[in-house]
Amino acid sequence: MNIIHVIGFILMLIGFWGMLTQKNMIKIVLALAIVETGLQLVMVAFGFIKGRTAPILDSAELVNNPASMIVDPVPQALVLTAIVIGVAVNALMLTFVIRLYQKKKTLSITEYKDLKW
Amino acid sequence: MELQHGIIILMGLAMILSAILAMVVKDLISSVVAVGVVSLFASIIYLLLQAPDVAMTEAAIGAGLSTLIFLYALHKTKDAEEEND
Amino acid sequence: MIKKLFAAVLLVFMTVMLYQLYSNITEKSELSGVSRGYAERGASELGTQNIVTSIVVTYRGLDTLGEVSVLFIAATGVAVLLRRRKEDEPAVTAAKRQSSEILQTGTRLLTPIIIMFGVYIFINGHLSPGGGFQGGAVIASAVLLLFLSDINYKINHGLFNVIESFSGVFYVLIGILGLLLFGVNNFLDNRILPLGEFGTILSAGAIPVIYSLVGLKVGTELASIIDNMKKD
Image 1 (spheres, one colour):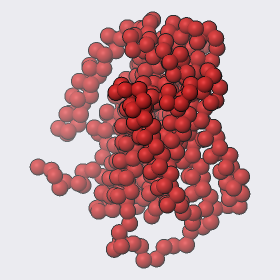
Image 2: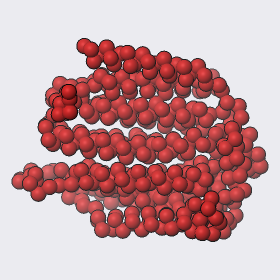
Image 3: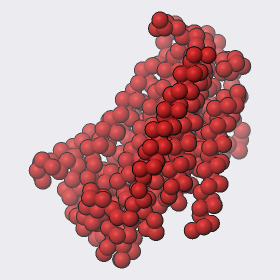
Image 4: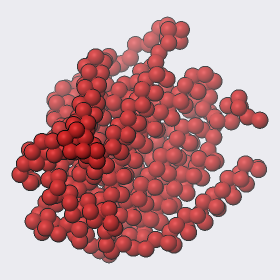
């Protein structure tokens, strides 16, 4: 499924572009969420094998010969983990954004110069 | 198989356009919703990639809860929305 | 100006790197070693229909423990950073409008059904797509519906803390039980309970128990993240 790799890579590039150019902190977190989605698409697409079925053994022939009939389950398990951790990390980052906003009443990242040389 | 390719290309274009929209548009609520749309289309693509577990997780967590957490964060920082970004 | 140039150069590098990665992709036609092993042994060794569940819960159970810990730490971080201090408490809170009658009545009807659906998802994790994480998210969305329909709704923090702590403790205890019964390589082994008949709900040993604990833990943690983000 080469199309899906391309879609995932383009999404990652859009996310990186957003992270590098946006000034609003919430938009930077959103850009990171887009990068995550793109990366997860690429990872699941790596495990896809044409003409095979999902890794759920619900018929007798699947149980007898699973290794030649199912797609790769390991990337799916990894992405399952990555999605759940992704939302927790996003929530933590948004919390930092909220705390920064409560201090300076602005969301623009150019206003936070305390560590700038 | 050909039909499925067409669907995937269309959904991919929709995802890429909403991702660009999310980064370009000024209104923060629109960009949060656009990122939610990207996640929702991603979950349909997971289903076509024979990964129903991942599709369920992405639809429930990526498109549902994550959008909502972003909206709550926007609500807490809403005085800054009129500011140019 | 110099910043934009820098960003453009970085993006070009990134594009070249991703293109290199893309041009080296070869389409797979066979499962590779580890995946083949999991696919062939999952059904007979652990009795699960859903191979992804057997990887997440048992074969890579230690990773899932790490994941749950990350989720716990993130939820704690949100709670600590957003806790309300005495001095910045707003003096007067404006009266909020109650939500509509339709939403309130609908919520009373739907909340038990949504929670039951979440429980259904994680109890059937070894048979059908789904599991603790998805079921937990569904339960958290039921709590969210309660927040939306009643502006004065407060979650029962004591009950949530008890559920979360006990499910975490039992999760680790089941893992250690596997170590004690089957040796050092068997953290979170599901064979501490009988495997049962393949394809029925009471099968796959301890996997339904483990996934129920994970579901309760994830559900309460996501609900507490939402609760902390909502407070104003």
